[in-house]
Length: 185
Figure 1 (tube, rainbow, N blue to C red):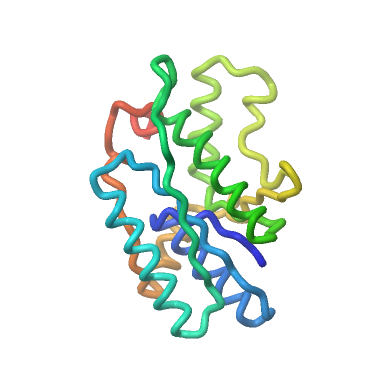
Figure 2 (cartoon, helix red, strand yellow):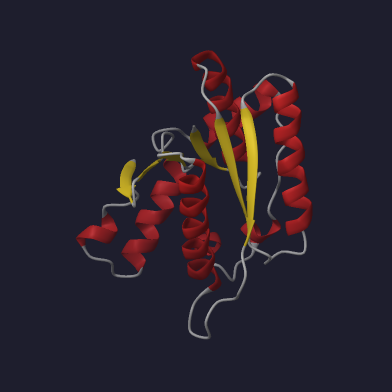
């Protein structure tokens, strides 16, 4: 079983589809892990979209199974929404992967995400560890968290989505300037 973090956005949709196609040839099961943050008015619709997409792909022969987790709670008073959502999402993804017996969890970060991370870390005055950026893989609690597309451009992922006619979610919060990553973009 291979797990893929699946928000329903363009990047994770493309990664899940690509992994599903390869898994079918290798006789592997793919577990699509979705985290419902409860931060957007659209979160329920996104959950439904992701679940339906996985159901459709399974009916087409891709070995994809869907699992979701709804977060409870909110950021602490001094904690940013971005940091809270990231920490809670990673905890939920790790728990779901372990429960399913997956020791490989794939994340859809790509080259532009890496560049944004490096710039944000530099602007925050991060040290050497922070300026190293996102690792392409690391082991945490018995799971290998891997980012197979760190060398891929956003344009290559967009082309994959277009070539395969993949439906995905556009998260309106990605344009919200209250969030540091969006201001940087």
